[in-house]
Length: 515
Image 1 (tube, rainbow, N blue to C red):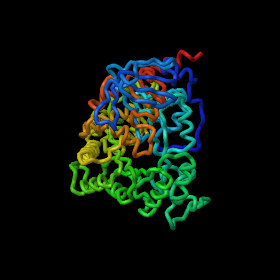
Image 2 (cartoon, rainbow, N blue to C red):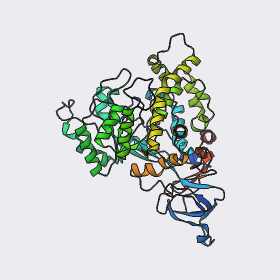
Image 3 (spheres, one colour):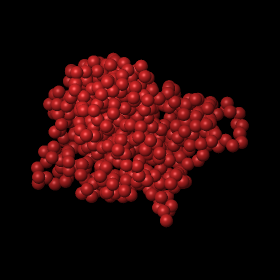
């Protein structure tokens, strides 16, 4: 679910504070470092490596040893960090984000509130880092949008997928025709279909779009099977032959293929096509909405996905992020103050900031006389069925050895219910509530994601890997609360104090730098 936006017609503004302002008081240099007497927790290890030493050099991990193996020598110029009582883990990977949007703001609202937008865009990358996400994969983007994101002075490492939507299907159907073919340059034209005026069908075959994506720097391919929802229904969907051709071309180019699919029919199609990753959980079934326990048909489908070793992203926060639009207490969550500027939170409370909730309300069936609290209660009931379905599917997949991958779909829609960084922490709680252990969540957000998304430089604490690491006071394989007890984030060897990543810290530094 995505809001309508224009990616190629980017309005380049002064979205960044000065680099010194953004980084002041938060980072050390990215020189050589030795972390001593630390407990290394890495997903490829069956047990933690206790009292270890980890050496960092030139943005990478150069050595992982038992502390005694270093001989206690001190090398001039090497920063030494005492890791006693701390845990060192790989940084987290969110393999399903969308980085163009400020959650809950339209392009027009950004133009109307430039200072709020500037502060939000400066903070969003830091908010992911605040909760330990050092690597992100934007599943629908373009080189221009990535360049804009990567111009931020401090941000997670980021990769992107090209969006191979079928012509006039989801999600490009949301754009006016004058814009959609420009803003989705990798769209597919089915054989025998009439191309739009001025469009050469030969440029929109699976081979052509994969070649263009690869040349543009994409690291993956995102495609879609979505017949629509709400007022949009009976949208065109791709043929199996076209998607199988797309997968062959993508694999030949070394790119994994992900598919948007959250319904039984769509995930069956993804299974038949043998995509690499299904980019959603399963909450839309053919059964009536009141049926939330797994049916024989759903079990059979999930068994097929497990047997095919297809990656599967639950993305439960898609539904909770919509539900929370109607929760009057959500914007009072004190954790929001760490990841969103105060002015943006206050704007969300205004009638203008509530626009998306008002857009969604007509489809919710609320009586006109229903008050806000009653609407929140009914919204919880409405979304509870889909959330339960997805949780039951997660529980079943997990027990049967599925290849579960951690992804949040942040933001899944123009909802402030998917705040950057915090949304991942909330998703972890969803997964544990669904039956996954903290260890399983840890693996899904590190090594499993790295393997599925072809990111060999991250995902473990091992010599040669990029030094994207977390220092925590608790073991995240034992409790997901550990991710709220990060002491330092290490990004490419650069040490960042977690508290320096908060929205309040950035605001105070920026305020002191302004004339």
